[in-house]
Length: 395
Image 1 (tube, rainbow, N blue to C red):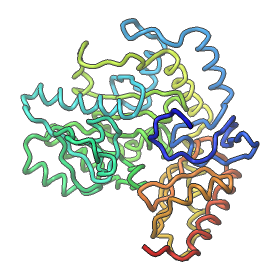
Image 2: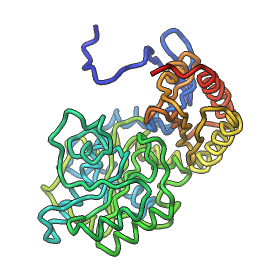
Image 3: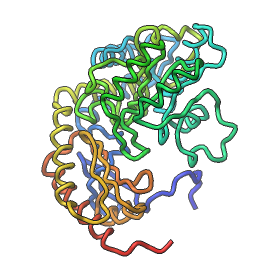
Image 4: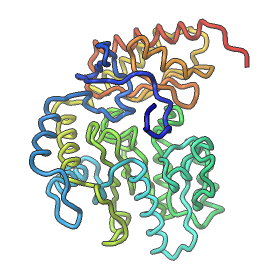
């Protein structure tokens, strides 16, 4: 019996090694990884340049402390500022920590404006993490259940509905910020319209709110640009990152601009491990490889091929509601719960997952090529067709 705490219903496989978009288990069976550690393995597995960086950095410095200057952290901050248009970066270890930092920035920003009970607008079906503040911001009773009392100070509205946010603006004078995922990953690969995001930018400007984008899953090249907001042509006030930033090494980042970037002062926030030399060296190498190998363009080309390929292969199949996505963040919505597809795919040598009960989610490494994408389309479309050909179980 394992002594690991029972927080996951784990699939019955343990991987021993990987290369590129492929993984192998202890029996030597090969799997096509179309999940990428849930948008973490940006460069796939055992990328030679990243592996060299990790070995070299581990041989020099892994950790010192944020009470000292950290050259690797400063270099990474400079690079993130250059590609994002943001001014200052706080480094932590995970996505929920990055969102905690954003929430704290919003509250401290509000205190500076004289607000006693600041509120942040959040969305239905959102997912921002599992700490008490971020699960309170999350729009899922399943995530929140049992952890009450929740953290107050959040106002929830429907996703991709600008009028709902306008109504809040007219009736709630405590609002100081909006926190939103440009693409809801856990919520079902729901993609916000660019006009909606631009409209949020306009409302935030009008009411002097902070526009805070959670790009933890959709950022860093996954949609074909460094950040989703670059498709819409504006700058947010705060952006949160994690997952794929260091291609598997734990790291999170909260990027801020303008007034939001000046809110934290020494003593307001911190992290023991955040921004350590090892994680920052890994992240900087990851960003350099994305740039040098033109993986933003690759995400667009290969993602389009997967989406159009699946749409063609599943055209007319009863039970397929939609095939959607941007770049290498894709969802196939079915008309029934399909969680069992994760095991069926595993048996077939394919790694996927199911989110929001009925959405098959794909988050492949950004290095996936056209041949591998064709294999993915062939394998997954066959699995979905077979699944949907069976009678719906009686409830």
